[in-house]
Image (tube, rainbow, N blue to C red; front, side, top):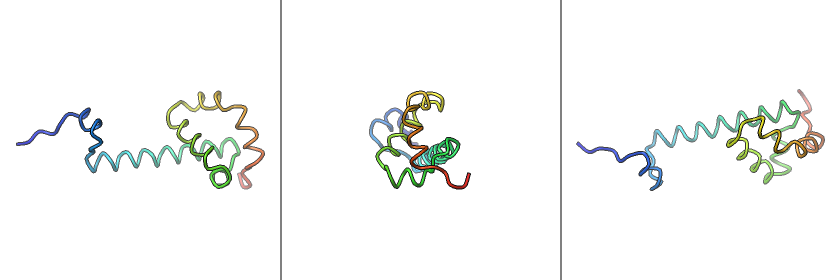
Length: 92
């Protein structure tokens, strides 16, 4: 019977089992959903922001996935307000 290599080896080589890859994609999807919900709570339209400033949207999404929500707000506080005015949620 073959034994599966340890997880660290799998991560290092980039070889993932299909279940792990699916779980990672689901986690990415949930982070995106949480991030879009966060933007709506801040009265920023996520669709308009992504269309208008894709690099900023990607940067914010990646940062939001790495830090706590409060840390994100503290780090981006002075950038959130201009985006709120530029890309407002029309139907809250």
